[in-house]
Length: 283
Image: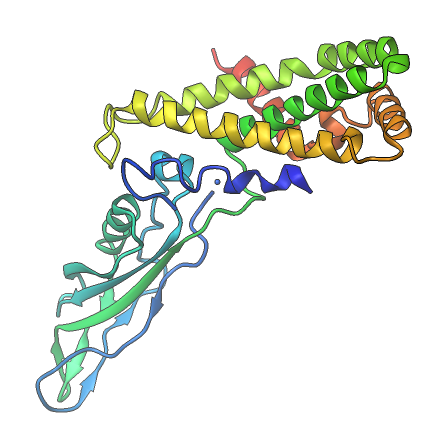
């Protein structure tokens, strides 16, 4: 469904200002190799379960939809701590690499052995950062609700223009829909602005935050407009033979509440409602 395509909106936002690829880290850490030693029998260091911190998914990286895997080389000392940590294979995004490094430094190990004696050893570790469409944040909610709002307006405007006999009924249905749903869109935009306000003055690509967010908003606007036009073309495009019936059915569904956010975007709507409730409880 078009609404679920939103997580790909930001894939090229900063093409001119740094490479870009929604949600917690998916997949923890995997060991991929034994400790290195010059000679003798070697037993690799063994990670202590639960000792490694969960990598933070930086807000800037989430907003820009940066994803990928980071492979690290960790030097586990005889005291069980991490004495050195290096990026062996980058995710392609400095923020993700640095977050993985920070988490890995908290890891603890049962020391490796060389000829039965404790010895330092190198280990390969891998962190995967993946945005899951099911995991919502303020930016994704704002994108999806805003996209849906734009779609309703575009389809209804197209129908009002191409089907004059339906104009008044469609206009009334659209007005009623906005009265019911616009508050959720406004709240989602407010939550997005709050998230944006947590960003540092400059992004990891060297842009100012204002420049970064301007590119983000421009990409959202472009993709939202494209998705809305696509839906309008399917329902009331010039090559649709039964556009009148399609417009009538769309307008009736809109008037009956089938396109209200609780029905069409229940998770996003619940996200906004929960934020409103939490805000009211905050002194």
